[in-house]
Image (cartoon, rainbow, N blue to C red):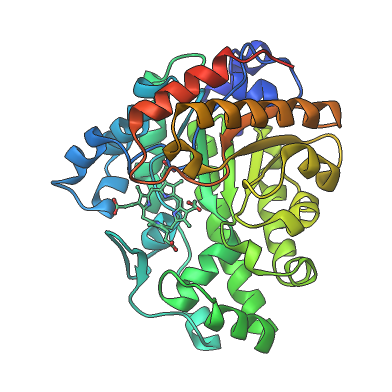
Length: 360
Ligand code: 1CP
């Protein structure tokens, strides 16, 4: 791949991107904010598009991806767009039979549970996600200079959980049974998924995304010891293999308070924190030299403007304390995704509130 050849990163030395500045220890022009799951879900203009198009159909149509990615930026003036896609898109592109079912999420036609199933998994050819690279180019052509584009992928553990369970899960029984019971097959699967993740991220990075986030949404199901033993080597390889792009790499999972040290060891530049751990406490677990991202509880957006103001202020203050404790910057976000019934106007007002707060 030609790192940096044809993208906006050439401008990064005088970058006006507040998100990149906060991620790399430079002073941002304003406190950067974006929201996980800001694209889709809560926006009526998204629902209007999706009324006539399936989720996967939309994900492989560059014009639709571009439009849906830009919708929350137009509305809320957030400092980053996140590519509209899904963590299972590269699996589908590789040829795995799956669908994204409304109200459920990813559903895998034939769950992957045996050594033979793992050996038969297809590889991802970059051409399979050509539409996603094209979408990134369309978005970058339209995005304002001050707005970063974040690419993303699912981490091997979270992808494995969908492939093995066949869909969303509460207990991850099959996943952990394979992990504990057949480590050789487990590592073969995780290695294969790391390859797919690296390829998917490279297509986005080659097309010019300004940052990437690796979602290990369900890693919080594991103890630190098991995370280090069964997961960390594979996630570490993903971070290492994209390091030469020089763009900020964000790592996030839900319920990962106990895993923050281990999730930092695998090599991200920015560590995402859910709402359970205050940002300044997170820095004590992560150590100095990383940026922190988070961590307003998404349900606070339903509690009225007084509570929102108070909680935004608290997260901003925690972010300042995190910086005083050694973090290189703070990117404001929710502790997990925007809930579908969130009032979009509340999101817009919350962004205004965050931008009006003093910088540390
Ligand atoms: O706004 C955005 O965040 C950009 C688009 C995006 C992203 C980053 C979507 C669109 N999905 C994702 C990542 C994703 N997908 C994650 C990691 C982030 C997280 O923890 O939220 C995960 C775990 C998935 C899997 C997935 N896809 C779920 C969760 C299922 C479960 O196990 O609980 C669901 C519901 C989907 C479908 C999906 N993905 C995206 C949208 C807009 C939707 C809803 C589709 C619809 O309209 O029915």
